[in-house]
Length: 328
Image 1 (cartoon, one colour):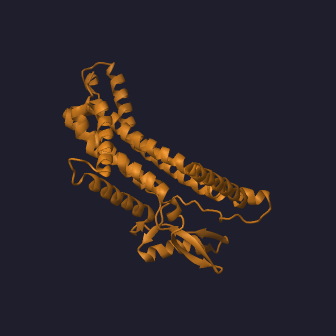
Image 2 (cartoon, rainbow, N blue to C red):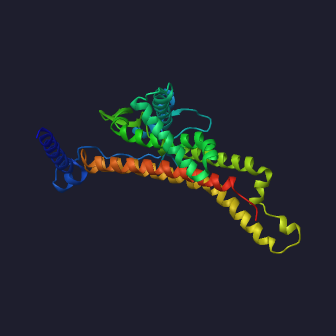
Image 3 (spheres, one colour):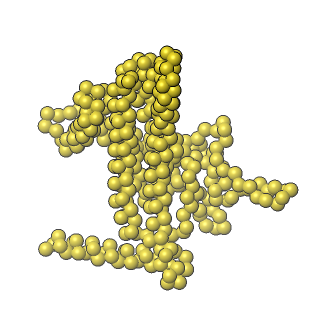
């Protein structure tokens, strides 16, 4: 009976918060003529923002909040400037998020598998179960021997994408409220968040795509030597004077293009899904605060899992094609 009452109380509270969130949100405030919504309209900025060193961060905050502009005297137009210079270096909020993800992964896996016990703890059992799932996944595509060889890189890619996506979701209430800004007209304006999901920075998906690409090509050359290049440069029949060799040359060039396009597809698939998810969460929070965002969080948990499986799975599939390639 007590459990039913608690669940009923939680349901009532959730319903009340949902109604209140709708009324004070951007949609409800317009419908009921309340005025401004509970939250100010968010700004969506795709480029990552520098947070360290302080001088670079203050420039970014100044451009974002105070809207520093230079005026074109000839035309009377204003031009905004923002971003790092070519020779500038800074630690961005997405870099901090990636480092935080790496630290959490190390603590989780070392804590669970660093000193394995005969009778495993709950954390050790969870880590072993996760390892076994990924190893079985790799072995089902590559076979037991090759699956074990590919496991370290594939598991790293899988868990980094997964942890980065899920940690970003759990940190949303924190990173949206913690950052740097300035006083504008007597009101503090938050301009740069301290941390931001690394998946929303194009550099992180690109780095993972390059790791996956080089990993596949490395094993392709290791399995077939320089004969692996015959897959892309099939000039054998042409050199033998066979006109049908033109088809092989054309197919080989298509293979080369598709091999390189994988970098682009890997990058923008992950970047697009992670960025769209963050924008969706921010906009739902602005439109209907409080409870409505929880449904989006659940969706983002599923999207993070799907993206990690797709990234690792496609790496395994391309690796399987590379190591089993035979010239026909």
